[in-house]
Length: 138
Image (cartoon, rainbow, N blue to C red; front, side, top):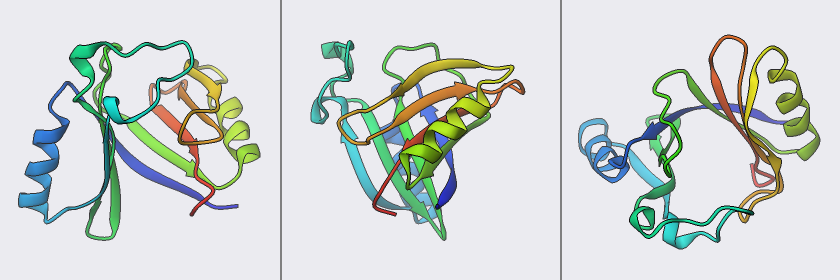
């Protein structure tokens, strides 16, 4: 089992600007970037035209550290205290999802998406929000 904790930045429509800034000022390398237009819709979620060109998921490498960014698709924006956790096993993603919700709350249920077999979003009892994703490729 592999587990990685990655800083997660949820932006308010300015993720592209932030990426350019981090490329210039931190010598960040863009590993991947997708807009909402480039991904299939999540089950039960219709993307509005006004967000289609916003960043749905970007991964940067800053030195030896990865950084995940995305623009909030209209959900209430929670700044600070966010971590992106990746595991390489669905069972481990489920275990972490279930453990973190004790005393906390679920923002997004554990579900399969177009890019992962399991993803969830939970805020723990300390107010830290975790996006938990299975990435079988790492």
